[in-house]
Each structure stands twice: as C-alpha cells, then as structure tokens.
Amino acid sequence: MGDLQPPSYICRQVHTTPEIDGIVSGAAWDSAIWSDPFVDIEEGGPKPLRPLPFARETHVKMMWDDTHFYLAAYLHEPHVWGTLTEPNSVIFMDNDFEVFLDPDSTATNYYELEVNALGTVWQLSLDKPYYLGGKATSPHQLDGVKVAVNVDGTLNDPTSIDRGWSVSMAIPFASLTVFGAHAPPMVGDLWRVNFSRVQWPHNVVNGKYVRVPPHGTDLPQGADQLHPERNIVWAPTGVVDIHRPEMWGTVTFAD
Image (cartoon, rainbow, N blue to C red):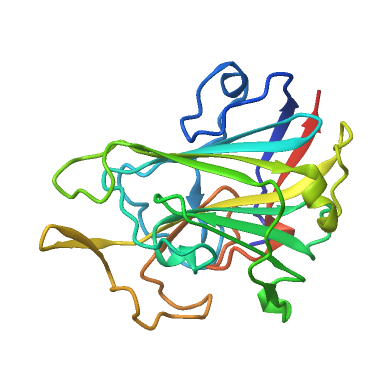
C-alpha cells in the first residue's frame, strides 16, 4: 500500500452561487471539472481486485466561495433504489454516496456525510480512525448544510433502466471550523478529502428491489474479510476501510 498515490484536485473559487438541486447544471457547476473515475477501495492492496460493477462510473467536482464548500457527484447506475428514510440512520446499508472531510489534514477530528438516492442524510464525525480506537459522534449535525439528490431515471422501479443519480451539496465553512477549517479558506489551503460509493448487489422480488444480503443480515466487520458490498472510492486505501485519512486525496483551494 506504500505505492498508492493519492489523487489531487484543484478547487476553484466561483463568484456565482450554484443551485443545490441535485441536477449539477448551470454556469457555476459547469465551470468546475469532473474528477477522474472512482476506483475499487482495495486498489494497491494485497488482494486481487474484483471487477468493478458494470456501468457504475462515478465522478465528483468541487468549488468554493467566501461562505461555502460546494461539491457534486454523478453516479452512473442502471438500477436506482433506496429504502432508508430516517435521517441519521446507517445510510451505507443502502447504496449511497459518502463525503469525508479533514480540513486541517491531521487524520483526526474529521467529518462524514452519507446520502442515499432518497435524499436521506447521515452526518457524523470521528475523533480518529476506527482502526486506531476512534469513536464516532453520531449524529453530528452541522448548521446550514444543504444536500439535494436528482434521479436520472426512475426510483425504485425495476421495470426501467436508469442512467444514474446525482448529488449536490453546500457546506458552510463556518460549520467546519470545529474540524480546523479556515472560514473562508485561504488560497493554498490543503484539505484531506475522500469520497465513497457503497454499492450492493440486489434481486427483484415481487416487483421490488431487495438488497443482497437483505437488510438486517449480519455482515463482515473486518477489513480483511470478503464484503458483499462494493466500495468504490476517489482515493483507494488498499483495504476495505475508508477510515484511513492519511491515504485520502488532497483538495487545494485556488482562485
């Protein structure tokens, strides 16, 4: 895993406030570039890689202004489904998109947000990674966070083939100061950041999507075990554990 090179992204300042509607269009969003496609979380690790799920390419883009960090993602997906509707439930038990922010790049005291295709959000934070004995604060609600989802197709309809779903977010810098962020950032500030897409297999039973294994099934916990879900990420960690902030990508704030 020592050969892994974390990805990097230049986050440009914008002067037009983007719409937070999940659609990721308009002059502000169009000015930001998409990241390279996500990869398997175990890339660069000791295990042979399993093929990525077909037609599930994922990209993100980021930008900022004096008040907010903006980010968006597009998740190609022929079968868009979601079940969890209770805020701050364990959203990765559905297919989801996840954000991890470590503004002071200390690999401690970092923020996590997860959202599914229904727009159900879980906000939490960790004092340090789980593998170092870290504890989560859940929920950890940040004031002023906006999250929107748009389904490019149909939701929870197995009879149709979808194109995917997209997410847009605005996170106030003032709410991120507890994690060491400047509010607003200074040009040249560097954050450790990662993004993850959790992808579960499914069956169709009586006209409905059913996760494989079904919700409520006991799941493997160790990073060295075979997990039924796929973890598709911006910055791979070499093992099935996204909580390795020292291996996350870098985001540099620029004019």
